[in-house]
Length: 78
Image (tube, rainbow, N blue to C red):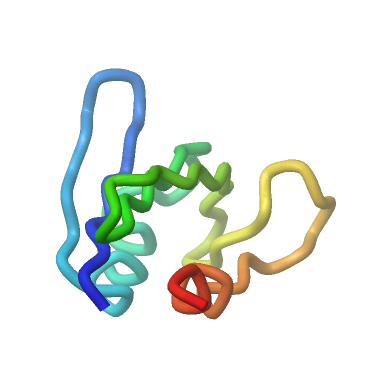
């Protein structure tokens, strides 16, 4: 899989090279923030997810108290 992951937070963008790195960066550096995750697939298509990071957990922004499922990102190539 050749995805790129970018966290965007009002001009403060970071690129992660793996799902694990994405999870760790969100939890360590974006606690108590709402950010978007831009996933660029190998065919250059971009998928955007909106998340809230609270107390070391990552939640879907528009689904109350639902943890974000990182497996959704892994399944993009299917």
